[in-house]
Length: 366
Image 1 (cartoon, one colour):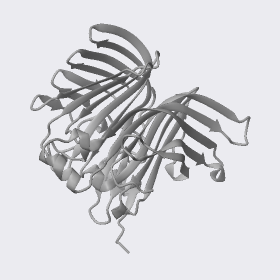
Image 2 (cartoon, one colour):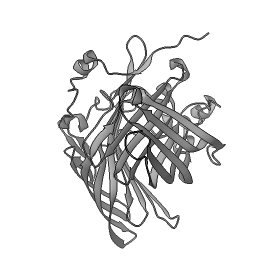
Image 3 (cartoon, rainbow, N blue to C red):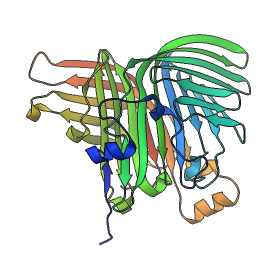
Image 4 (spheres, rainbow, N blue to C red):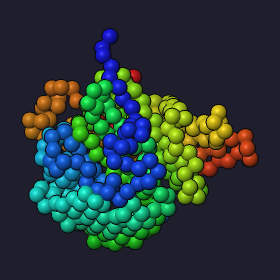
């Protein structure tokens, strides 16, 4: 039987002290640059998405290194900015900008510049500017749910000197104003948005087999939900992450009380990876005198399905084929339903549109 190493969320008092974090407070520097510039094994990105009033979705990501395709982890810092706009009529607009040597990252706050593109904020108010070819986006994001992280936000992989994958939902939900110019046509739209920050010190395909990640605004509720499945070396351990807020107040966020389920899996037509038409996060704190919620995501459309190897060129692509790398990324739209099932008071059910993803680095488990 192969040796299995530990995989866990850092959550002890010693963990908080080690990472210099407060248990009940998030500091602005946590959204600043957290990795050694160009250091071997490191990766980092700042992510934003929004669902706009016309039904469009906009996703903007600032990456310190281009790690798409599962590679690039050892390369020096060479930032990339990506923008993806999906309209209700099926139109997909995708642009990217390579920063090469023209970039700057602040360590005391979120203040990122890659060429003419900027991403700045203070855990509540953010401004994002992107100009790539014939597309310009100016976005403001104002938080309506406070910054949050699951425990320390650091997932540790390994028993001795563990590697880490870190995650900070800086704005779990916020109000968005976006001015978008595409091929000379300008539109000003409002919507709801989300911003998080990820970083780590090892290639993600070495740590993580796949993850589901989702967020949604559902009536008075805001939900962030994820289920991360580690690689074989770590026993394919699962780390659930869950946060539910109502009227801007967090009402459920103990990940140990979450049970994840996925149903009606079908192979994706492009990547071949199994995609669940229904994913369910059940949060039950009734044994502790708390609440019981069920959050269900039902897929309607796959708006992005990429084979990661397609983003690799030259000798690296050949090497990826030789080692059997077949990673895939899929982004979905559909409906999310929040059910409040507690016996105290009347049951409540609300449904709304949502955006979520499946990142599948490793070999298919089933």
